[in-house]
Amino acid sequence: MDPLSSMWETVPPATPDDLAGARRRLLEGMRTRRRRVVTVPRLLVVAGVVTAAVVTPLIAGTGTSAYAVIERPDGTIAVTVNELRDPEGLAAELAAVGVKADITFLEPRTRCAVPRFESVDGAYGGPPLSKEELMRETRRWRSVKATRPISVREIGILPEHIGPDETLVLEFRDNQNADVPWTMGAWLARSGTPVHPCDRVPA
Amino acid sequence: MTIPREVEADDATLIERSLNEPELFAVLFDRHAPLLHRYAARRLGAGEAEDVVADTFLAAFQHRGDYDRGRSDARPWLYGIASNLIGKRRRTEQSLYRAYIRSGVHPAETPGRQVEDGLNTLAVNRPLARALLRLKPDDRSVLLLVAWAELSYQEVADALAIPPGTVASRLNRARNQIRQALGQGE
Image (cartoon, rainbow over all chains, first blue to last red; front, side):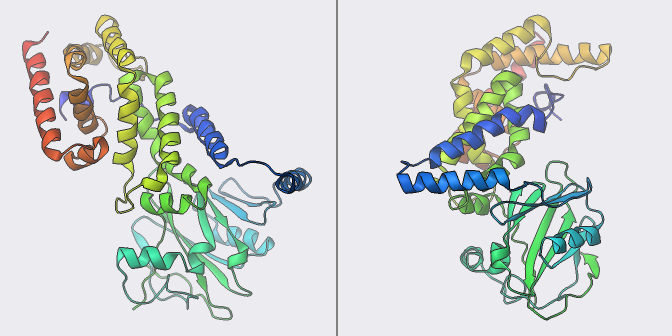
């Protein structure tokens, strides 16, 4: 390594505590940018939401330190995954809040052999797509709409995109990176069709 | 053929989705802020680095509609914004180098090296700090984006919106000055 690259290399990457102030400023800035002129009807709606937030318990579920399932007042479900262990326990917690899920935690550089299930859309299956096609299609796939990242350890589940008796299939893979601890694939399996156990193969 | 697509969001996808779901932009922060803060802290110290990180992501959020979605990695974009913000704090950066030359202590560095290590490091870092202090600001930005942020020539060109040839000439000039400073063993 050349002397300049190693100069002051012991300056550490910032921790979440170091970044808490900057993150808060970003979130506040994001809210400010979205603020609009408040008309009377909008004010009433906002007031209603605030009331609902106050009277609804923020944490409807429970969880171990490995993961947590939180039912939010807006109907979405926040899932925090700190450690890739006890997938059955996480699936049970999701079942308790009304989400039928199949959870797999994968070792680094592994994946589940395909096919494991029949998907509701082209997110799992179908011909190879170019990047442009993929960007276009992802806007339509319910498999993509049903989950969204919230932070590097947290996803949101949007039950309105999950049909009756469909299974949310989640495969988390250990990313071997403390900053981005896992990557995830999320798909919806057709109603009334089985999801087979994961047969681990090299990724 | 079954293709399980892990649509787990490269930076470009996240930025695009954040146009309709703004809160997703916080994921980009979690992903890149720790190392961006480290880069800024090496140049300005930890206190200023926090401001640079916050201002970088706020500016990025404001202009995310202009992001080139063909670029899956947002680091050049973010480091380019940060470079501009650091450039506006030139005196703070120069003060940090001068203070280091005097005291041998960087305010954001983790202490705990062996004394002998520390002396060897100082013997190299002092002339480096002097050389960085003397570089033209534009040359210093290019040099440190390569050495500390580990961007490629093309990524630096993207970050600073300059041609790759300009990156190469600035880098060459800066490296010559660094070599001279080390060779003179000031």
